[in-house]
Structures are given as structure tokens and as C-alpha cells.
Amino acid sequence: MSEAHYFFPPASAYALNRFLFALKSDATARARYAEDAEATMREGGLDEVTRAALSTFDRDRLVGLGAHPYLVFMAQVRLAMDGKPETFEYF
Amino acid sequence: MPLVAAAALPHTPQLLVRPPTEDRGLVLRVHAALGEVKRRLGAARPDAIVLIGGDHIEGFFLNAVPALAVYVGARAAGEFGRYRYAFDVHEPLARAVIEQGIEAGFDLTYSQDVALDYAFYVPLHFAMPEPAVPIVPLYVNVYLPPQPTPARCHAWGRALRAIVDRRSERVALVASGGLSHFPGTDRYGSPDFDFDRALLAALAEGRGAETARLTGDELDKAGNVELRTWITLLGALGDARAEVLAYEPSWHHGNAVVTWPV
Image (cartoon, rainbow over all chains, first blue to last red; front, side, top):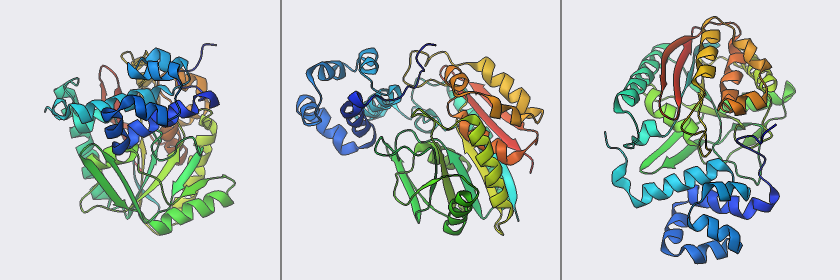
């Protein structure tokens, strides 16, 4: 059987998933990340490999590291909504 | 008075924030179907809306992942961009659900402090009657495996119906979710619309109980992990025949708006 689309989040990815959860759900965390991504990721306890994957929002690599696919997706959406609010509500 | 209305509604946030990736006509048709549900809910004069939703890792993170939960706070509030929502909770009904649900053998979690997820406020944005009525948010874990089995969701729905039938309030029961979509995965652009259409045909014939025999693996493969909220509702509805008000498959989502006579 192939891996499920939504799989059990491995404990090794807890810091990464916690970081993505903050980006998704906490406007203050997003603002800090936009201001200084590297420092925010270090404070979040993310290792170098994870920081590299997150800096480009490389979904396949992040999911490979154990990130929950939905958290990757919606963290990116919320960052985009903050950065380009004019691209929403177009009709 | 027991159940006075039943519906299953989509909650994809694109319905709310309308990004340029979406087909305007399709979104407006879904809005229109949700408007019809709003009209019917208003006509049913419910005292409360019991809303069964799947948390998108918003209210509950990995510090605690309840399979089935009841929100029993005074108010339920959440936000998405500039959209901010707060709803009164029908505390006596919520308490009855948690207390009698536990008595019926379902080891439910309850919370008085979780952020409301868009699975709850997107449907209510479009379908809450005016004036607004209090809600009871019921949670089914859909995105953090291992999730409750479809059989368990169906059984919980049956127990929920028995609880509602003993109450004096007029209750509307609404499921939020689906249909097929795969957010965050490489299947995002190719939902399983065939699964959705077969499902809706079965529901229109009153064969909702068949969903209790689905497996978690089948739901994951079909992009329908959220169907657990519908299956819970179907447990409460028995063999009632669904009326499909809309099925609008977009490039990423099978938007279904369905009601049942009660």
C-alpha cells in the first residue's frame, strides 16, 4: 500500500509542524517570519536541512521530512494572503 | 421537538475569499445553493444549529488530537484574513451532547477554549439564518491519522440523533466538509469526482448507511477524509433520501450542497 495522502505526523517532525501551524494560524508569527525568516526558524528549533526546505517552501521536501501536507499548503496560502491581499476577493 | 432540518455543506475558503484562481460563475452558483439552505434553515425556525465539522489543525494541534469532540464554551470565535466570526454556543444543548454522549459509551473530548475553524464559519457565513441562532460545534478528526472509522462516525451520529430527539429545542443538524479534494498534496488538481457522483446518487436513494462500511483508506484515496462529518450526519438521518441542491466540481474541489427532509 502506498503512503496515505494524510499520514501520521512523525514525532521527528514535531518542531516543523509546530512552526507551520504557527505560520498558518498566528498573524504575529507570520509577521515575524516575513521580517526575519532565518532567525524565526532558528528560534523554532528547526535544523539546517529543514530550514533550507522551508526557505523555498519545497513541499515535497517538507512532506518528506514529515510535515503535514495541509499545514504546508495553508501556511503558504496565509503568507500569500498577507503579502498580496489584492489578489483575493477579485469578484 | 427533535430535528427540524438537516444539510451537508462545503467550506472551502475560496468560497469566502474568492481568489482569481476560481471560476466566478461556479462560486456564485455554490453561493446561491447555500443561500437556498439559509432560506430553508430560516423556515425551519431552529433554536440551535448543531454543526459537525472537521478541524483543519486550527483548534486542535498535536498537543491533543481528539477523535470526536464537543465545544462547550460560551462563544465560538475564529478568523480568516479580514473575516472575523463569533457565534453564541447553545450551552444546554452542548452539555446534553457531551454528557449523554459519554453515557451512551462515546468517549468524547470537550473543550471550552479552541479557535473556531473555517470548517464551521464558512458554511455559517452563507447559511446562518437571520437573526442568527446559537450553535453547537461538534468535531470529528479528519486530517490527523489515525482518524475515527466511518463505522464509528455513523454510530456516533445515531447516538447523537437519540440525544437530539429527547430535547425540547428545535435542532438543525448540519455537516461541513467535502466533497473530494486533496489540499497540500500532488492530487490537489485532480479530485475524485467519480467517487462524489456515485456517493451522491446513493444518498439520493436513501442509502446513506452504506457509507459506514467505507474504510479510512478508501476515504484517503478518494480525497474524502472529511466525509466522516457527513457519515456522522448520515448516522443521525437513517434512510432519508438526500436532495442534492448543487454539485459543482471545480479544478480542486467537489462542492456539494445537500439537504434531507426530516
